Image (cartoon, rainbow, N blue to C red; front, side):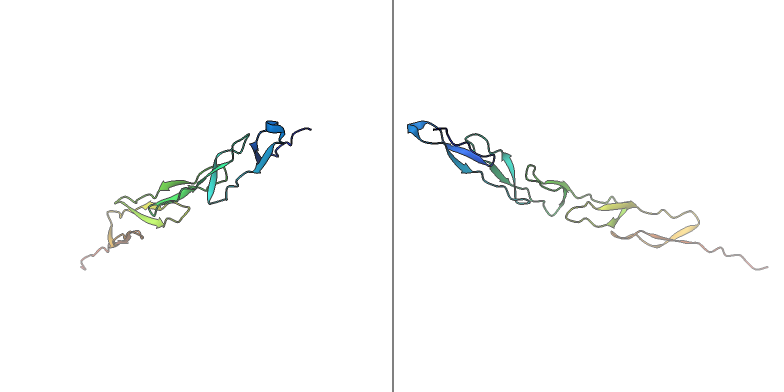
Length: 132
C-alpha cells in the first residue's frame, strides 16, 4: 500500500513504513498577520515556527510594517535641532518633520520667537525720519 503524501500545509509526524504504518501528517501552525511572523518554515518533519513581531517603543515609529515572513522594523523618532521647529508631529508610522527657523533680515526684528511647533515671525522695522 502506498504511503500518504503530506500536503503543502502539513508536516510529517510519523514516517511511512515503520511497523507497517502509514505516514502521519499534521497541519502546520499558522502565523497571524501583525502578531507573528515565520522564522522557520513548515517543511519535512518540522512544523512552522512563528515569532511575535517587534513592538515599537514610544520614541520610535514603524518604518516597515510586519508581514507573515518579516518582522516589523522600528526607527528612532527624529529630534529637531535648536535651529529647527516641528512642522509635522510623528505618528505611529511616520517620523517627525523639522523645518529650519526662518531667519530675519537686517531690516527686520523678531516679532514672535519660535516655539517647538511654530516658526519665528519676523516683522519689518519702521524707518523714522525727522521732519524738516
